[in-house]
Length: 110
Length: 113
Image 1: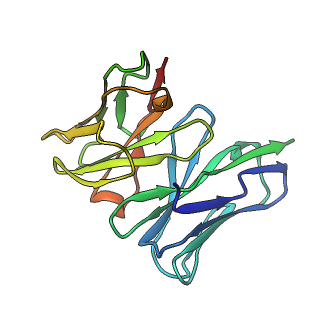
Image 2: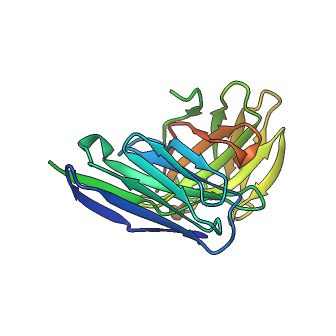
């Protein structure tokens, strides 16, 4: 089973609105990575967070790593149609296994 | 493009057969990981190879096996195929395992009938 849990599974967003997807692990992570997968495509790396409490921004995307290194979030502001896809968090466990969450599938209403 | 290529892109096999999937890693990457992605699910870690040695394995039975070659390309072999093995199989290459970003290939869509 998945050691990294991700919610919500689906996010239907009106264009221009903000949303957040959350990722939780039962164990401390060495790092957390975020990927985006477009329909019919493969996961594409977005960012990696390593330090406790780390926050990184990429244009309209803000990524956070929790203080205990067990949770993370991705916040997207002013959603655009290009944001459509499935966003996965992936936590690196102590034995170097990358454990993916089930993903949040985002659809955008124009 | 990531520089990671997988072959074939699609494959149909019969239950009980064996299959070999191939992956060419990105230049300079010494680590290859294989994932199984069922429809609507996140990628599930199968195993990882670092410098031709398996150095991590997920919860998959022994009929899932692999190899990594001196040029760091890799194969995934699945014996005694079951219907539940139908999935997208993804290969990802990276430098020094999961410590750095993984570059995924486009995947092989395996259908077992």
